[in-house]
Length: 133
View 1: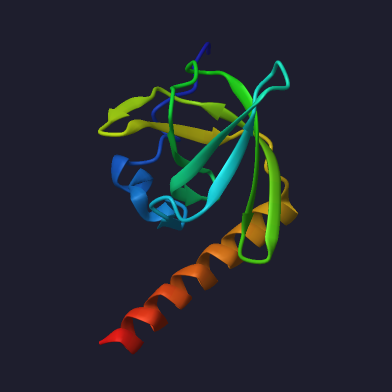
View 2: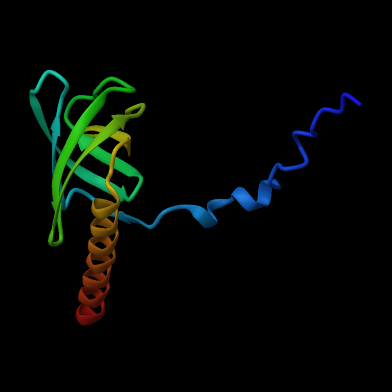
C-alpha cells in the first residue's frame, strides 16, 4: 500500500498556461523616465520602452548586471511608483541598451495605481490618434 501520488494528475494542461494570464502592458517608447537606484546608492537615469504591472523594459546607456536588485522610481499618470526590481539580461540596441526587469516588491496599492494609470495612458493615446485622423 505504498502508493505514491501521481505528480502529473494535478498538472495543468499546457494550453491553460498560455498568455491569457499575461498582464496588461504598454509600449511607452521612452516617453516615461525612470530613476534606477543601485545598491551602492548611486542613481542612473533611464526611460521605459515597455511597462506592465509585473515588469518591463528600460532603455539605458550602459547595461546593469543581470539579477542585480535595484529600486525604480518613476511617475506614470497621477501615480509615483517606488519599487524594488530585478534586472534581467540586457540586449544591445542601436543607441544604448534595452534591459528587461521584473518587479520584486510592488505593493498591491502601487500595482493597482500602475495598472489604472497605464490604462488611462493608452486611452489618451487612442483618443489622440482618433482626433488626428
